[in-house]
Length: 282
Image 1: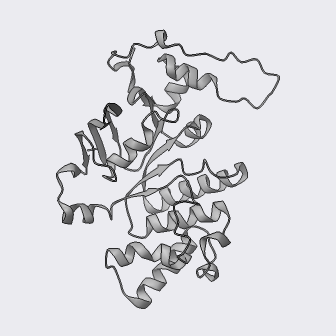
Image 2: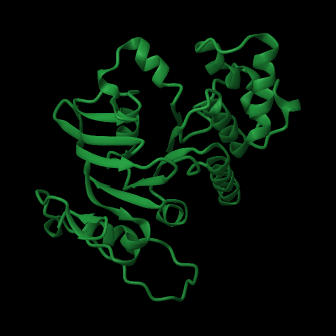
Image 3: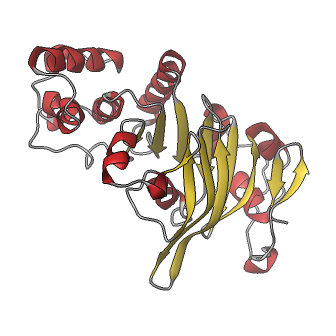
């Protein structure tokens, strides 16, 4: 059984359908990528999965249970299992709270541990994400962008979740810092047996870190399958256009940029299997 199953998820805002009949499953221990341009519905999908946004219809099953049927008490317990790391490490941390308070906050909210036990846990979490516990009493503005993202990650790990939604977790960071945070995420996944939904528009990064990937276009998934298969043989016109825009290291290398035209896309096409596990709406 998959750890997370998203089934015909829909999220509408007035006349706009931000997420349109989205379905996919994430196996325990894998990193599943969700890619597409800004406005394609990636972040909305991630937040609906966690019920940070209430969906219009559909269901999300976590370990076989439909979380959209949970009442307040059961939902609160579920939040210990499913957490999020936000895109912007500057906006996601309260500037009036010290790092110690930020990391400890989930333990306080869920009434886990007391006094010295919580303080020890916060120190442990700070070390886990590669930060110096002597800096715990600093405010967020005393840390670099990469360090702030590590604080956000420590906060997400405080409740020992098994599933993390990583919403563009390195897009706001310098390139040199991105690789460090990505390496940390991989190390934590192996050590803590974590499962990731990795939301990103950076296809180079997705190719490197994700075992499978789903491509979103105007709220719909238009292609999904093993990352290697999709990158080697993209089937949907939108996927081809996205991949053609990836920068290449050699500035003199010839590369054909594919321009997507509305006429190229059949918006009513259903996903069909192209090869083993590789599906496309063509």
